[in-house]
Picture 1: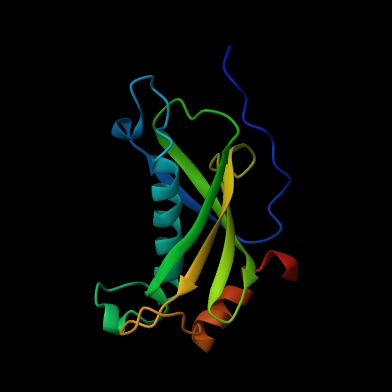
Picture 2: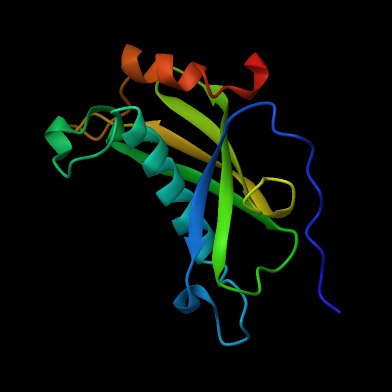
Length: 152
């Protein structure tokens, strides 16, 4: 018997971004390796920000809001992913501060109905020269407000 992924309520906030689990993402037992969840979530965020014209080009001085660091990452695993294929990551912001933010995520079925894992991640925006906290740009804050869970 395999664990069933919990059913989630209909999506009323955030964005659902498609992701692909490949055969080599699975561990020796045929389960999605626990370290792959954050990687797939990061790829979903990268895709979302690139769609908004806020992607990272590899130049820290020009990175702007993409110059940030993870302060905290928490993940709870609800049910195993047991095969490669199409899935999704549901993304939203729980908090958008001056220099930091907290985002929530669910690794889920393509339609968002079943949750395999969920969590939060805290990011801090950094100044590229000093690596000290720096404020998010207004462009970023505007894009982020659309993703705030509390706004819905």
